[in-house]
Image (cartoon, rainbow, N blue to C red; front, side, top):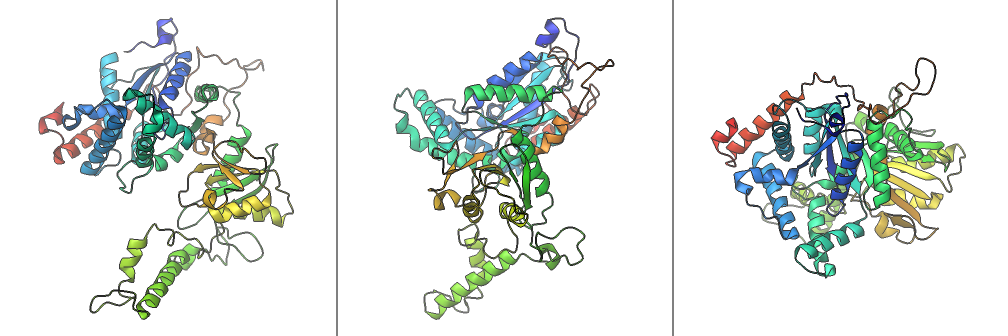
Length: 514
């Protein structure tokens, strides 16, 4: 068994293993986040073990000699190697499999066996790049796994990465390396390849969001998160956490065919005054609910009107071009016959992403309308939404007098910033009082809100307030300790990955038995 700092001081507690994944765009300060987490966990008597996912690639013979310097070359080749591993195995969670293998190796080195959990030990997994990696780790470790997302403004990330690249190349001119930094960040965030780098899609899956670009605040946020995990009975939700949970709860009512979104409007004092979800409007006000006899939501009609009318609009354009001889068609082809192929080609373009033909009222608009129907003033209020507002919602948010918007999931299709630079500021505090600040959410995610804030024992038998101290604190999650079963799941994941790698020619058959 490994010996934790707490055990070395003679303490008797045996806390369960923890698994903490980190996600953040390049330049977001994950090294600093790792340090803060390690310090906070040490205060709880936990030993932290760093699992570098990119380093685990070096255990695969094909990538044993991946470069470690200069930094931009290191990042680029590790990105490609990760893409190759996911692509050749057909497994978006393959890198998580390598991380799990690294965890078992750490146990073997620190304890008695690879499959024997080490008490008072936390594994910090840096960093995750694909949603399937998060899914894989959650399936294996259940509620013992936490995903921490580090937010840093784009301009800050670009400058930090460019500076790091410059230092690795023994240069003092970080601006010279800014284009390269931007290229790597863009690839990291979202590649067209579904098995490529997908940080943008992985980020909103987090259990807690922290601001990594402000060191003092980062440490405070990390300390609070760790204390909440370790069953501190008197950490309660912030106004932002409470409101975002309400938005998340409202989101679950949506039957939209594309995505669920929830929004609430809250006063500066934390009072929720309006709610909304993306749903089809109903005559008389509001939207349809489950159980309505006259339910006419899109799923009840059996189709998406957006796709239907976009297809009709594009078909109209093709026919007009054909009538004027502007289409070069092969023999036997017509504007109608090539429509299907053109629709596939146009998928993802600005034209096809237009939301003008949808029947659904967006969540942010629904919240504003909810307030309007009941005569509630929203000037100076904050709007919380689970997804960054589209440009149509943004203009109504501005016009309504909302002062601040908080969101979790990015929405790259939105043109809000491009169309309303005069009225909104994305990322950071608004530099002009009249601009609406669009800010990423920081705090405990709605998905773990109930788990981490549910009341635990707060008083003793005499009625006195329970004393919480780090020496006795144990993480709060429902899995039974020490009778855990996840080592069996670990073995299965590792074996499956090895078999896939053998089939892909990335590993010798003999390696599957090691």
